[in-house]
Image (cartoon, rainbow, N blue to C red; front, side):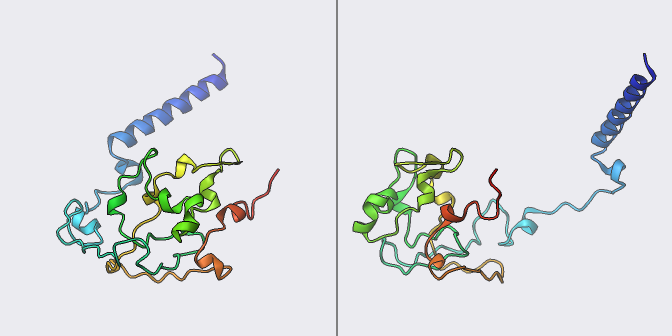
Length: 186
């Protein structure tokens, strides 16, 4: 066996030994730390209650229950998903085959329904760089990004101040147009 292969074997053995020691002590022997304080689920919660209990959770009061009854909130930041200005109770569950949101928000229905159509980014396959004729199935579950606006109190103080490049960007999306800003296409 050559000298270099012996050295490689020794380095690998030493690495595995250190790894084994680190794993068996939970990393404390390696970093020299003692057991840290374990936080209770109440300490982790913004609501200051057990994470799996909802007794202290503020009730969600929707600002009007039917579509069209509410004013729309301004987007939280440019191209942020807008909040849903009505209750979604009658529209759930949302599945690939049953999406009641599209009854009013599909591009074909939005004008007649006097509502906002899904943006171009929802009708585009970004991974394949291809325009689609129907909703991209990666976007079928609306409530993953869009949530109903409520009168629930803030659980923590928020000092974030949004920046909008244009007045229009407060209420509409141009994400597909600016998605590659600042990137170099090769």
